[in-house]
Length: 205
Image 1 (cartoon, one colour):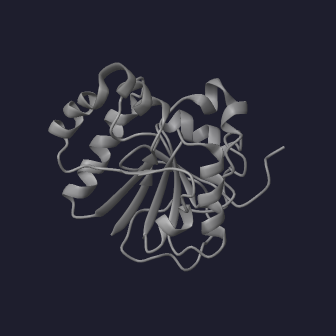
Image 2 (cartoon, rainbow, N blue to C red; image 1 turned 135 degrees about the horizontal axis):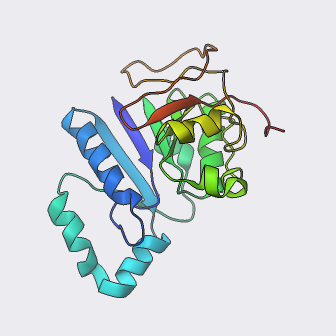
């Protein structure tokens, strides 16, 4: 299966603890034979801070520990829809810019033939709900939430804009691109956390 993953940074863990978790997940996917492509901003603040402190040598530890992992750095003019073309599964991590999250959702709504999941491994949906509501998930097929408590926030419709429970089933990776979207209650359980469905709708009231 071809998987495209968007993250704040794969190569830098400077004040970015999610990087350790994501490296393990992506390494495991590659080990299972999946074709994984990772995109990250060229000048994300974590990577920029790492370079400011340690220069390019700051990336040596990552390159030594994860020789099989690499990312494509993007800047101005990046076309998210083109990056997703041909993918079976696209996963967008929560620590991305809202504009990027929305653009990828728009590509899915426009007929993108991939399953699109929002990956939330943080606590902002609970600790800073207004910040998380800046994300438009109306084009997303589901949410990969880190744990049952966080998944419950999305099921209640208290997560990002366009997310609530009971309109689409959680999707599990498969080699077949989805052609239909059936309605089913949200459920929990996945390799990376609990899964809550995310419908196409306006911000919950």
